[in-house]
Amino acid sequence: MPFEIEKKFLVSGEQYKQDAEKQVRIVQGYLSTVPERTVRIRIKANTGYLTIKGKGNQSGATRYEWEKEISVGDAKELLALCESGVIDKTRFLVKSGKHTFEVDEFYGDNQGLVVAEVELESEDEAFEKPSWLAEEVTGQNQYYNAMLMAKPFKNW
Image: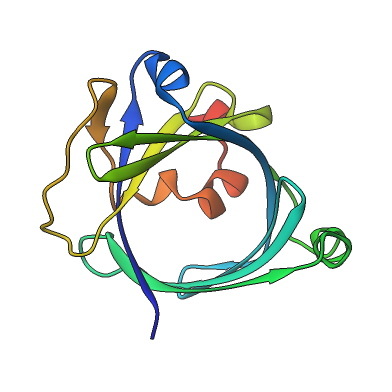
């Protein structure tokens, strides 16, 4: 089974923008936000995706993830069926050592929130931390995109 292992951090400042190799706009919604199985529809640039994620392990760093590319037309149709709310963000890809951090700058009801994630081979894998990384929030449910729809950052 495919699993993702990632750690999540808050971001301090805007240096990540200058360090970014690429950026892309992402809009996504959820057909299901049940923690045991979230089902996400995403449009990233000109590509659609259907993703199913399982519940995280005790640390929150490892969980099942299955993703398939779909057409943008199909993604738009499925977005119309999603639970209320949408996640709108720009993702900045920032290389640090041998890893690439995905830094998400949120808009709309989550304006002001900036979160970075790094995918790892194992939960204890060492990685080079950029100076703009702040507090680690791995496993804190309120930072999951699916939770940001139900309880957006502006309401914290």
